[in-house]
Amino acid sequence: MARQIRSEASQARVLQAAYELFLQQGYAATSMRQIAERANLTIGGIYGQFENKEAIWQAVFRTYHPAKNIAEVVQQAQGNTIAELLRDAAHRMVTGLGDNPDVINLTFIELVEFKGRNMGDIMLMIAPKLFEFLQKVIQGEGKLRDIPVPILARAFIGMFFSYFITEILVGKQFREFYAGEVLDPFIDIYLYGILDEQPARGNQ
Image 1 (cartoon, rainbow, N blue to C red):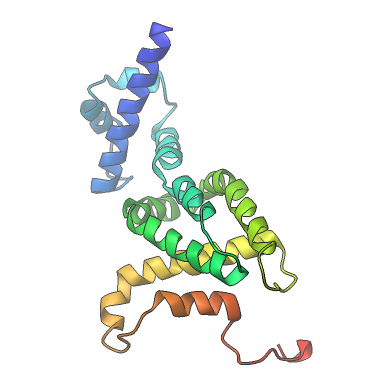
Image 2: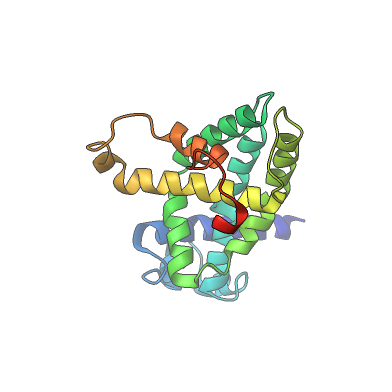
């Protein structure tokens, strides 16, 4: 038991050290020696716990990516109608992302260095909570189009993560052209689309 505790403690030190270094200088520029020095371990000690640097990244990504916490926050959204629930959930998601700004660096390292192949692990972590929330949404007051829950979930994540990203990248400049509230119109687009009326199926 004591050996297991020591092993878990040293793993936590490795992940913390690697996380800090990856954020500071990127994945490619971080060496195993640097991780070992910051974790106050030998390189051999690290290799006894992780096969290679990529295995460390995978563990860092699963451990420090805030998606699971944000999904739990979204799950707590309140409202009686479908629109109220989704509006509150969107605000909660954007606030949760803002409270975890490192999500940007983590996500871009994953996309650039690993082509997003570890994102599936994150989706598997958050899908049950998000699907459970959307089942609650479906039971709310109002009428939804016949859209599968996984599509609703993907559209929700895509819409409001893109809002968060573009707010960071161009939000300040965008306000030179439009000074009004931005998030609520994004929510309206998610809820109602951009057309005043639905076209015939053949004209879509």
